[in-house]
Length: 274
Image (cartoon, rainbow, N blue to C red; front, side):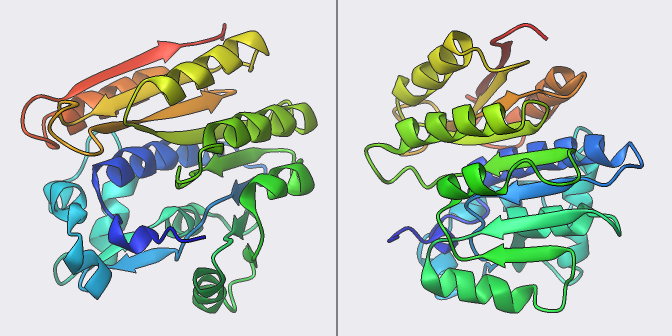
């Protein structure tokens, strides 16, 4: 409960995972049937880059600032949203709830969970009067077992934990296992940091042992491991949409030229059969 994403909003990990999130949402929008999204660690929804927190730890300068003013060919919906939020210059960075909300259609829904009391209240205030968004002050991992499957039977569970607790990887694997049992056809996307290979390896092993359906792993490291406290991050996607691997590869290739210092590395790998 001590984690505040405002200190890290807009960094290179945010750019990668939020651009990928937009790709999955575009897939869901391609069919007329309504869909639902569960965002388990929603945060504030959007972040003021002129705030004290953002200025004290200006990680966004190495992230969203690097792509602002250009349209990403691999993820145009994401870069268009950033441009629309900042007509007078880069001042606001969208979090996952704002990205989802912007791409919802009339009958689609967002369930946003946030455990931090102040952030949950801020999130409720932000989306008060928005009938397509329900904000829950609750543990996001617990919400996976309680809120899926949604009545729509189409949609996404987006799990973006802070990775502050020693059991975070185990809780994430547990949530994925529970969620996929309750909603076998749902798309599940989980983010994780690349500070060492333990989390990446544990998630891959769990995906292959269970196995998780149509699981793929995408990792992007804009920095060499010894150059940055967070050199990169990864995504585990279960029930990955058709051709998402190709789209993520194109995204990683494009971001590799824009983020970091020229030493970026990336990989997109299937973990279980499509």
